Structure formats: structure tokens, C-alpha cells
Amino acid sequence: MIDANFINPFLSATLNVLKIQANIIAEPGKLLRKNPGESLRGDVSGVVGITSNTFNGSVAISFPEATFLKVISGMLGEEVHELTPDIIDGAGEITNMIFGQAKIVLNDRGHGIQMALPQVVTGKDHSLMALSKGPAVVVPFTGPAGEFTVEISLSE
Amino acid sequence: MIDANFINPFLSATLNVLKIQANIIAEPGKLLRKNPGESLRGDVSGVVGITSNTFNGSVAISFPEATFLKVISGMLGEEVHELTPDIIDGAGEITNMIFGQAKIVLNDRGHGIQMALPQVVTGKDHSLMALSKGPAVVVPFTGPAGEFTVEISLSE
Image (tube, rainbow over all chains, first blue to last red; front, side, top):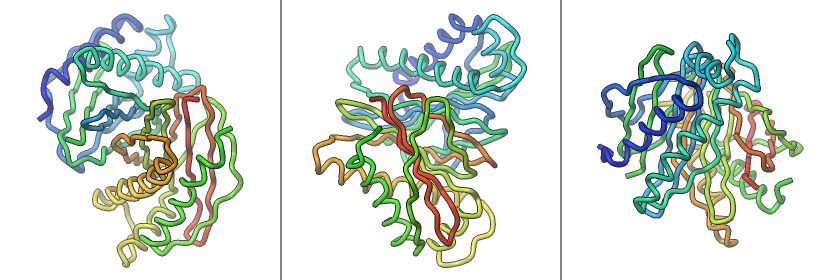
């Protein structure tokens, strides 16, 4: 299992970015261990690779379309009802902000993490599967805007 | 535009891995510059983040389902007609082999690239969009097994 001290900055950054950028309140649920071959499902996801001197990994946030539209509506201050390229770009910015904040906290503690370029995945009910034999956790979030999921997969 | 000396190892590794692992012959087409906000489409994709001291990036290979099934059939030496979790795992292995080989060549030339954990994306006609304001290229491949695409996006 991944150490809670490593996971918590990702959860705090998720809550923080959604609250400040989109005025969305969410609550993390129980951490679930993700087994190799299990996948994360969503309609809009942000994925970013991480590397360090001691491990590498991949982190992702996956939203159902309805939740994502509420997040973007909160960010823009107006109701958004469909996924357009500009709006999909917003998923990349959210991903960048969340995982960038988490990286700062972890690197202050000496982890020396580097972040690759984020990729935004869109497609109704797509699935993401990290190729890792190492530990992985999935954290489901709930709230008035709906559900979404954060995943952290590490090489060791 | 990304330097051809940086791109070519990815193309050679793609041809090499598909030939050796799956007995699939493919041919790279004309390099296309990818503009910010443009996306890569496919049914099965392998995505991996890269980092170095001077830039970071994301590389991806995207297959239509029909092409991917032919690649996997070639790897297994038997006809495969549908996407199962085991087969999807094969996309991760192909991604790892291709980008791992390219990394070795580039690092022999001093690039000092680290590779994050690959993610496999599945979902009919999903799209991938790298969040970069830097250069990005898309290389379409063709061959008897069908078309597929390799993308390289860098931060600078």
C-alpha cells in the first residue's frame, strides 16, 4: 500500500483546487487498493506521469461528464452544457493545478518528483489502466457536483 | 518543430517492436505538426510521460481496434477478435517496449530521459490531448495491419 503521507497531498490539492477554482465542495471516500489490471472509468480524465530518483508513477483524475460540466461551470461562472475543445482544455488545467500543488508539497519533503506533460482523455466511458506491478490506490470523491475519482499508481 | 534526431528513435523503435514482437510491417508517413488543442483519436492507446533535466513531455501510440487486434494476434500467434483485459494489457507492454527502446537510444546520446508508468486508454473513438504549448508531432503509420498513430509532445 502507498504511504498515507504520500497520498494525502494529492487529496488535499484536489479539494483545494476544486474549492478555489470552481467553488466545488467534495469529500474523499475510503481509499481502495487497485489491483493490477483493474481500470479507472470516466468520460473526461486528466493523466500525468511522474518520475523521481527512486520510483516512477502515474496519477489520474477521472470525471463522469455531468460532474466535469459542473466543475467547469463553477470555474467559468456560467452554466456549461456540453464538452467543447476549450472546455476539455480546462481538464488539463485542473490536472496540472492539482498534481502541481501535490508535487510542491511532496518535494518540500524531499521526494524530488518531476511531472511529465498532462494528457486529457475524453470519450464516453473510457477506461485507464496503469501498467504497474507496484502499489496503486483509487480514491472516490463525492459531493453535490457528483462523483469523481483520483488514482495514484507507483512502480514500487 | 521537434528535431528529427529526437523523433527518429521513436519511429525506429515502433517499427522494430511491431516487426519483432508481432511480425507486423508498417511504414511511417509524413510527420505532421500538432497544434495545441488538437487531439489524437483511437480505440486503444498507450500513453507515457517523460521527464528530463531540460524538458518534459508525453508520448502516445493510438490504434483503431481492428489494427490493435491484428498486432495482438501477431504477438500471440493466434487470431484475437475482441478486446479482453489480458489483451489490453498487451497494449501497455507494446507501449513500454517501444518507448523504452527509444529512451535507450536517446539516453546514449545524453538526453537523460526518465519514463513514467505507461497508461493504457481504451474506449471507442476516445481522444487524447497533451497539455503543452511546446512542439508536438504526429506520425501516421500505414501497413497491411491498418493504420495507427504515434505522437510526441514536448514542453519546449
